[in-house]
Length: 471
Image (cartoon, rainbow, N blue to C red):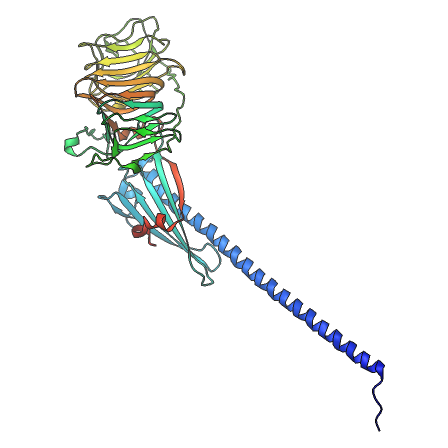
């Protein structure tokens, strides 16, 4: 006959069973926690790696932009021939569409990862302001999906005369003025003969920017801008139409509110040799006048006690005139048959705070705007004015950031060719304005600055360049 288990042994066995169950539960919890931690660590590592590769893709895209910028500046700033600056062993160029493309590969942005860049450049040959679109692709070594980044960079030339018509405060047209562009130096070689503007001969371009920083642009009832109209963020463009060649239908994509410009102060020249005029001359340089060796120009100080240029004056050499201390008085006033005439090999640079007005054919320059430069030194808040009136034709580069510039054509033959920067600009229907894009290289011009930097993130934005860069 067996004896029954004692109560103490039963309790001890039950206790050991409970401890084992608790231990198993704790082990399960620890196992789950460790598994979750490992998964979190793995996920964090993957996210960090992906983020690193994403940043690497941006850097690669920027490298593509820099490679294109180097080619642009080699040609435009350093004078390297176009075909040399854009070597055919690297770039595929199309002179008809003005587009260059290239692919760069062999990059290692991270261990096991590979990278490549596809670059597309509009107006690589300086036919207009260039645009660079760079697409980078980074393929991780883990077999994960590749990463792509797109950068779109719009460029503008440096210099005082890189746009066409620029005003600090407002631009106002009345009637049917016209603004377009051409380039007098299409091969970027000053030694070759200048190309004259002629819409009929195919030199006309739609590269004129009518830009206003602080105010608005009014294009009148029928003004035509072959190019772009741009204001600051608070400005508007009304009236007329802005468009490309071959049409006069308004193109809203050519009108924007992202315009900005700086208006640096004018620095008067300080030559070592200056000729002081005691009387108003009829011809410059005169036989006894001295040439400044530093820039091979004849420099003149025009005393404030002298009258302005109101009669016939002929410029036969390279002349610079400083005519200051004339605020509120005339620096140039030409009417009737009186004229300031530049010879075919001459040039004139004028610095003045006085008023300039020329009616009829008062200023005769038959070469290029670079040959006649006007720098208005009038003070901010002053009333300096520059007026071209009647059937007058002016070929000049005008930089007068505190002056009011008026182009008051009479009849239908008034023409202004070159570039104008002023406080305010007004034109009426008898005037046509033709911007010479070659002036972008003048007076501080050279090279390009970034006017717009944008990462293309949406599928719609990227699709615009799908053919050139791939999906």
